[in-house]
Image 1 (spheres, each protein chain N blue to C red):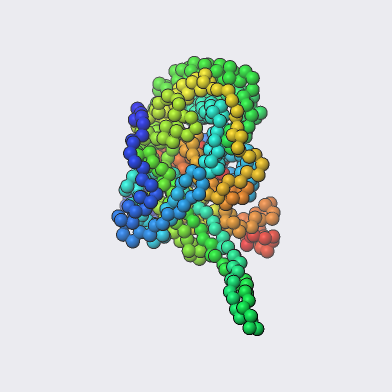
Image 2: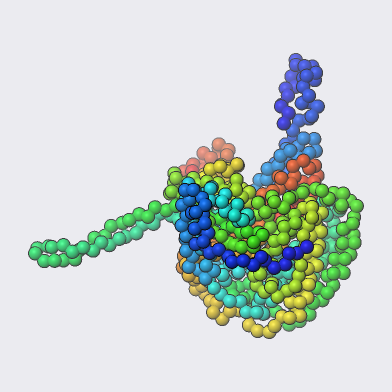
Length: 389
Length: 216
């Protein structure tokens, strides 16, 4: 960094003559956020700039912190279920599933087959919703104001209608229960879902036609924000960001939780680990999700939706601990629970993919232009309700 | 694009991993911490002194993905112990019960969940304990081994007060810099008036002094 130069008139001439530092320019510190529209919430980055180039970037967290974990440790196990909706408020149903999965492993509960199918269907619908909107936001951050995002929101609204019909709420589902789901599918829901899934590829093709080979999008994203596979593993990056860096690690394949071993789908991988790969990977992942949805909607069996052994009231797992994780749309969402045999968890920890994916934000932004920081952050896919908890 | 099924080979039990660590790492102090839950995720309790060398060894042997790092608080426990002994009182043998309190000192704990990306194994749970909850709260930072601990150890420091030695940037993560307490500890007292947040400004701090509980 060039040293700070005094601008006192007495030695001004000397500086001009002898100091090359002045030609390199001063370092300018910019505080981006917390109200910056591209930060997707209340997130702040202290960026040091040399001209337009980023030389340092320090994220500042905590503007939305409400200590979710402390609140959950003072409540019963089930009472935390609605609160998990508020972590990543775009994907409430996958949050529910991750928490239910961790508790089920802790207490040794079984999930009936129909409930497993419903979980897969809702999770994949959530993934479609999350990925389309993320692309909308990303393109909006590049300056394509409005149109692509509204296209995405139009499709999201169709899925939200399905979720509202099923859970009673558009976004705050509170749908999963330990050992199953809260209520069965309403009449005609499967047909409605099949219609949405059947229409989706057409939208995806149209969307891709407009974006994937768009010159501006390619120029802004290719080679920007490169993340190597080694660093991605070292920093425990998860989800589409990890796979865009070429690491084949999808928890639906690795852990085979739920009934994911019954579905035939591929794991798309990126070659370059740049923003364009992260964009493309999400498009490809949506196409794979559609395959899963088609099969699941065809095969869903009749039957009970909750484990008869699972107690709603007075639920007390035996002492022990468990870490359960799923492949949420944003990455590995895990819950670490310690039970001491009482109705409240002794320790309740959320492993937030959004927060941990931000570990490498500085590494991706160094040497890039300030305008690219917005895009790189957009491609990480964060929701501040989960980052700050 | 896809490598398909996971590599099939025998998965080491937690005892095997412990034996290997004891064999290969000088001065390692590792014990197995049993987990009674049906998921049977047993863990390795590692002493503070050998924490960094064991972590380095584990990373070299394939545990390259440190997914989750978090803290746990165990407050001091007071137990009433009853001692029974027989004594001769007035020529008769009698059983006398003496009660006295035994304080089990509490501690703070850092828990790490490790996975192996290529071998697709895991989780391997490792944990380290501090000496107590007040002044002996240092643990070796594992951020030099797994970069993913960077923000998570900052969060543990913020919410539990474990001081990680060797962390490149040991600051609070979620609470503000002037905050002095550790909210996730079991004995944390919530402020009785959230509207009355003390801020760095002197005037407000003065008004806040002595107001309510749980704040300075």
